[in-house]
Length: 415
Image (cartoon, rainbow, N blue to C red):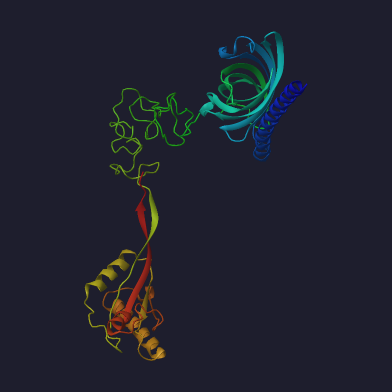
């Protein structure tokens, strides 16, 4: 009686131990599934999702063949729901029913689990891995990895093909099972189309066949992504200024006839009113260079002795250079600015700076012939010091005249 009771208790202990192992497996799988579900709900609000049904052929490892643990191959059906939270990464939850031959009886069971999927560029295929809890004769927690592909049928429908390897994570058991899946999916909540092939230079030709990478935007290209040469003159359309040159015509670098357009500005000689236009110049409809207005400026500086407004070097070349500048741009005016050093009374310095400005104005009018209406003089005293160190050198620099003028100059526009 004592022996019988011991055997009974041993069996009960073994059953309790197995149930605890099963509970641990279920808890682990539930935790993984819950974490995936929570993460997906937070990240897939506007991303692609899919639901699918599938058939599966399940091949067991031959090491498990033979009594008393005979497991033969079988088939199954199931369903899955997937979430694509980036163009590359997705996750899914899966449940399936398996019908497996198990000696001495046919056995059926369930499998539930979760996978993480990584989609290759251009949706060539995807790799996946996850955990599954399988219950046939016993409950087993299995890790799986595999490869698959979604074949787009249009109208949000896709065919699913997969192959997966299953490995029992229990240390006491070995052997790898293989599953082959064929399913039909419906995609929703985002773009159900496969990822568009990459076209880095946006010329309409995908990178995989583009033989002319980095084609400028807007350039017309052929079927291998290279700029077109419509008139066949050897000059690509994006630089050809004469795109309709007759076949066989000898052309220059801009694609224009060397006989009909001598200066290669894109205007035929019979219409060109400005022959020999430089190749760099942009031209108008008459073949003449196009100009734009550009602002230019210059200044002149004159140094004075202490408390003096006398110009000691009236013949300095800089005065003549400034006069030439004013004569070159007759529509301009100039302001002569007088400045003083810091020592002394501020009001006195303002007076001295005004006299200095007027002295330069008078010199430019009387000696260099500039129209008096074009020149004004203004003193700034010690309000705009260039050097505030209050040294002899600083005082010399601060006693100065600056003449400022702004003029408009015609500048050629380059092609």
